[in-house]
Amino acid sequence: MNRIPAAPADSADAARIAGYLDCLKTQRKLSPHTLDNYGRDLRELLAMLDGAALAATNHAQVRNLTARLHARGLNARSIARKLSAWRGFFGWLAEQMPLPSNPVDGVTAPKRAKTLPQALGADDAVRLVSSANPATAADSATRLCNRAMFELLYSSGLRASELVGLDVRYAHEAAPRGQPYTSSGWIDLAAQDVIVTGKGRKVRSVPVGRGAMLALQEWIAARAALVRLDPHPLFLNERGSRISVRTLQIRIKAQAQALGIPANVHPHMLRHSFASHLLQSSGDLRAVQEMLGHESLAATQIYTALDFQRLASVYDAAHPRAKKKSPDGG
Image (cartoon, rainbow, N blue to C red; front, side, top):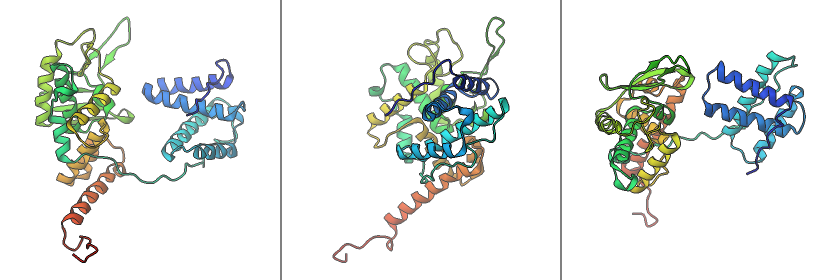
């Protein structure tokens, strides 16, 4: 993979990109991960322009760059993300200096094939989250932490970032000599709810099931011995720090492999499983939308396709008129 050369640190365009990223950080409150993605996409734009000024970029150039990205084998989703980052930057730049127009307006990514989210079967999902397999953890506290995290992912359909950002309880603290601290997510054991701040800074409350509640209570009892400097995080690593998304990914994949689950399991797969299984049982699309924190119902409707796919496979396997005849007519 070709490395994207960084723009010269003293260039005017690099300074403009830095100013835009600072605006996204301070005004739109975007996460560090999202800011990194924006910065990478904008530096790539600068590198592909090969010395041409950003302010002089025109519509034809952006179409040409899009074609080059496609020719490099970049998928449609990644191209669309880059175009979105570029479009937002030029919109901001037009407020800083006169531009004839936004050169990205009207440029679209190639159409992408619709792919269904990957979800585990109900049996595999339950087996994954309820097991505390010694092969996947070095000590009992880590096993308890793993089980509580996995149960909560499947019980409440959280995103990985939402899960690792949870606090053990709500906190709002003034810090005279530093930054004030306010929880973005926390567990409410009394109400059996989890409160999270999702995309677009949208706060939602999701019920926590009985299995996850029991796992959380066991973990919280063991967690006290691991707390070091920061008392807030619900889930801790072996050093007593807030667990990272990467660590969560590694642990859940190891758990699945130890159990022989034939899938490349990642945290978001449990979110998909939560949505698919809940929709199969309830048929309540609006409720699933609310619990997932989707802005649009269309984002939730994809799980109806998963449900139809499951029903179709059951039909193909069970209905006498769906079975294919063997070559000998049997």
